[in-house]
Structure formats: C-alpha cells, structure tokens
Length: 467
Image (cartoon, rainbow, N blue to C red; front, side, top):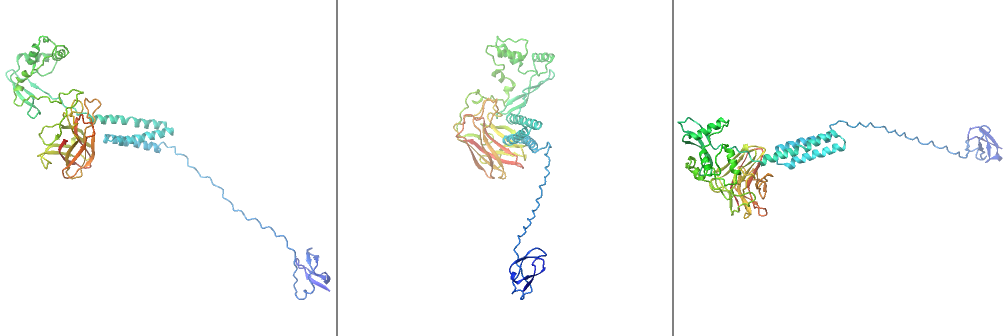
C-alpha cells in the first residue's frame, strides 16, 4: 500500500510506501527534506500538512538613521569702528551740562562738580580703550573749566561792589569881581553825607597865582580851598619849611621825617571855615568799634541785641550787603502796612523767576572783611525774627555769618543757616540757635537768600534781635 502526498515546498506530488510513514525523504524536484505523512490520515483529508523545521529568521534591516542637519555658520557683524562711541558722547554731555550749571548756579558746587567727575571717568575709559586723542581732549575740557569757574564765582559773590569815588570839592573859577561857586560835603544830623552848594568870597591873589603856576606846569587840577591853611600849618613848625616841591612831595616828606607831624588842617581852623559854620555840620565821634585795630577782640554787647526793630532807630548792623541778581530786588525798611510790632517792618520783593539774590546785615556797612568790625555776642544764645509771606507759599533761607575772602582783615567766627523755610501767610517767629558755636566776632549778623521760584517772591521781616 502506498501513500500519496505533495511536497510542502514546491507542491510536487509524491508517492511513498506505507511502511515509510513518519520518515523523512528528499523531494526529487526541490531537494528539500519532506516528512511522509501517516496512511490512516490520508483518506480523511485531501490536504496533507507537512511540518518542516523552522528556518533561521532573517535579521530585520536596521532602522534608518535620521539625517542630522549640519550646523550653519552665522555671520558675525564686523565691530563698529565709528569714533562716536558711548563713552565719548556721555563725556561731552557731562562737560557741557556741568559748564552750564556752573554759570547758572555758581553756589551749587556739588551739582556741577558731579558732572565734571562723570566726564573724568569717561576719559579714563577712553584711555583704557586706547583712544588717546579723544582721551586728551576730554581730559583737558574736564580739568580746566572747573577751577576757572569756581574762582570766578567765588570772587563775584564775595568781593564787594566797587564804590564810586566821592568828589569832595569842585571849584568853578569866574572873573575877579564875582564870587566862586563851590560844592562841599557835609554830614547832617542823621549821619548821612550830602553835597551842598556854598558861596565863598573871591579867591585871593596868592591862591590864584598858585593855580596859574600849576596850569603852566601842565597840571589840570582845581584850586585847593585849604591851601592857605596848609601853608599856615607848615609855617607853624620851623622844622618843615615850605620848599618848591609839589604838595605830594611835601606830604611824603612830612610822613618820612622823625619829628611830630602837625595836622595839616587843625580842628579849630576847620571849624572857622564856611563848612564849619554850616548849621548842618556836626563832628562825628568815632565809636569803640571804629577804633579797633586788626587783632583786637570785638566789643562785648549786652542782650537783647537788636538788629532791626523800627525804621529810624539806631542800627547795630546795616543791611548794605547785596549779592546775586541785585537788579530785581526791592528792599524797603520803612514798610508801614501791617507790621508785626511798631509802625514799620521790612518789605522784600524779588521780581525775577530764576537766579538768586542775598541781602546781608553788616558791621560796619559794606564790610566784607576788609576792615575791623563786628560784635562779641558771647552772651547770646539764639537769633530770633518774625516773618510772613504774601501768599504763604514763599521759600526763603535765613543765615547768621558768612565766609569772607582769604585776604580778609576780620572774619565771622560762625556760619549757620535755617535751610529753605516755607513761610506762612501770618506772622510767625523763627529761631536760629547759636549757643554751641563760637560767638566771639560777628561781622555779618543776619542774611537771607531767595532762589528763583518761577514767579516773584514777596515776604516781610520784623523784630530781628539776638537773645
């Protein structure tokens, strides 16, 4: 009995003896090993399943690697070679702003010196970056202007305004028959200096001849009304006989001689002149403070010591000092509308909306330290004053003492300030304590300073005194 089956690989029909069932045979067509199926199962199914050994599975192909994009080179912009770098711009801005502030606000040294310091730092940065030309120019513009501006501001604020010379006598020569018209300087009862006209007899022949001699020598000078008096004073001392020298040489010889120099115009002779007979002429006696010499201590004063109480009262300090924008200042010590006490107070109006102005009470008047003056206020503990504003929004700074120049003969022993104060619309008392300070000499007893506030500033002062 035979078994018919097919090759499981090539489907070729095969026939084998039943005794070989379950054994392996080789397919003559494909050469593969085929297992001969059992005979009892062949009629039940037309299909024969042949189990073959598993073949080694083929290795799966490796997964495809994703392509990594190559890095692209970014274009780097070239460095900026322009000379207008940040440090140069900032440095020049600091120089320009600092110079403008130094001209507009000369006392705000901390403000404009900060800008010059910033310009100096920018010049150091330029030096590190080896920009030598810009460094040199910026350094010169940083170091030269500040000392010049500070020196100009110091002398502009400290130096007193030049006083115009007073022409004592002016003579107008007329013909012999007419009297000579002259002007003279007198001191009235209130101590004020006035120039008044006076009519004197015609000039003598000797004085006229002396004047003609000077004119012939090329000197254009008026006749000396005291020529005869000077001649008499010189003749009174035999050791000083008149010579042909000029008047200046004679005075210089008198000063250099070892003998006692007689007064050129004695008081009794001066009293007999028309000036001495004037009803408004008074002898002004020197005060204790005016007889002081450099180095002498200031006179001690009692307390309370009044600086201002009423117009017309004897002043201890005079409000003669002016600094800053003086042209826009209106200052009236005889304001009679709503004073704090008495009948008058001080009216102050600063018309400018910018800049600044300062008023100082000095002893003696116009004393910026060139002459000996001031008082010893050791007994005082504070300075008090009353003030009010026109609208109640005015800001004013009040001070005691100031800094004098290096060449000053005498100086204030203290300097203190209230700082900017916003005034009220009603009268209010303010105090500046000085108890812990050196009060041995005060030339400048009281000051106030007004800064521009965008509109005119008006305020009032009264009853200023040391207590």
